[in-house]
Image (cartoon, rainbow, N blue to C red; front, side, top):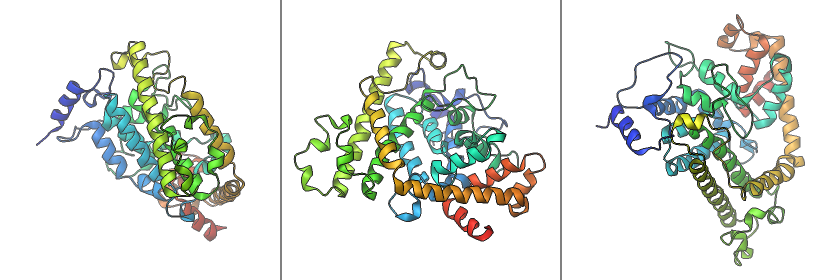
Length: 379
């Protein structure tokens, strides 16, 4: 039988000096004995997967409303793709796969129904209460809102996983007083941040083409296809329908492979150049370490800009977004006006927390379809 100490010893022998070792975790807010078989990060991963918030992501929007078609990504399938890409990146850089996977699986737990549209409207509604941020909400979910243990609130995750939720080098800053803004996060956390960006860039191309909202002619000018291995350079691709599954799958595989390979190569080179030898030197680094090469960075930026202009701001999606925001705005005001409509556990929170925050907690945890049903019932 492989026990926790065996896994921890294997990590010491095989992982890079700058990897985050489970045996050296900064621990949990509520101390508890270690598990005899699972490391601290493996235990975190399992707690996340078994949480209600994780299951609800199956019915939360990524870009397209889930019930519009069965094959569009949901917040859950996006999360699974991020975890898969993250593990590959971590393995090749000799980082801690278990920590990386746990951060990937937890990173979107705080997302609202209806994707970023929901986040934007809650941020506006809470502008006098500090606004709404899905990273901060994810931390709130795992620290407070999940109810699974009699000994403590939340999931009681390790410092490193919780730090990975709130520290992002590509977008947003640090939330939470316990996380030193002068310290860089673990490389495992930085990798997940980039894998998130990589995953949605690739699968939004896939879903956009599948939906017909973007076309091959829209994406063909992108410089990221200017490579001899690009499917768009294949003389036979013209025989495949623009909406055909084969070509779309080729394009997605190409994007993920090219971006992930560049990310690993460039990150590895920076580790050598900056003489990062252990976790402490990584945390003290003045410059970000995880990232694309100078040649790839503008290509990724161009891809993201196209997705924003041609897909995210497409009139059909904008119309759905406006409708979704109306649902959330009306629900919020209804719950503020009558807090008794919320479940008992949320009503109990009103004893020491503002009504607006508790209502936002309740709404943020809803699935798209539950929010729609509740709006029909209450409004």
